Length: 375
Image (cartoon, rainbow, N blue to C red):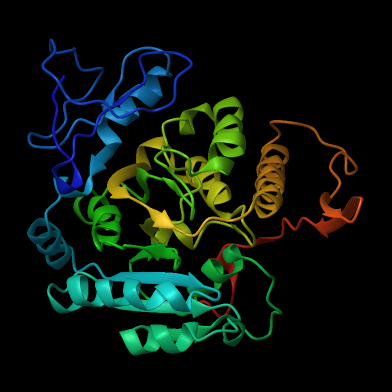
């Protein structure tokens, strides 16, 4: 088994060979070379996974061929590929009250990937109704800022992140579109170059997710692998049970991913928090597993939500997944099988007060079907 070092020269190896364990980082050591399942990796690329038993053969093969580190594709190689193909790249940040972080992210992308090297052609922040100075901070740092409600004004906007991402396709023009969450801290521009890289260098790749360590950082504690609670409790079980070919994705709900416009424009977008699992499942159905990939970009630091917010997110993700199971005839569901709301409780005096909110699962149609869509 070949070993290597990822971003910042940190050891990076994951194991799938022991059942009932989570992905763990271990220090690389010398072992006997294991036979390749099907394909050899190009020389110099880092081997990230030990793909033996306990995963589907197709997933093991995919992990060995479609998982990389950002360091596997240096910037000069990306620029050469970009120029040779004449490819353009747009970066989109969906933002709602992210004044504290959006400027730093925009500044890093502009400095490293637009001014130092011309990798990114377009940097857009879509403001979905911030009450702070998110828009001003983003504009001052060098982004083009567009308000969600100014895009496709004939159609009233739905609340949710997916709505913003869907509308962003109408105000960007890149052949490759890269989405980056606006609440990231200690941002590294390798988040962008890493996930854009395979799309520039491999014409067979159409959709790339970032993978990373996701610590849970609070004022009183720092749990190295404590983040991604909804991923582990909801999304990963759903994918393994119903879409096992997607079981190899380390961060299926991560907000950092890039794709070819030619694919994104043909996909429906769930308007809320279900957008990530919806796009992943739909991309698999439309493009096939071999068109999907993931890239290790290091560590993701961001703001964490409270348990009740995570509960609402989990319900939305479950409903989005259920909609796709029904749509593809994987399950038969009566109209009253799922109640489109969630009731939660908070302490009120000597008892508990219930609070019920609606769980929206609206899907926007592929933008290519809109008469306003022009690239």
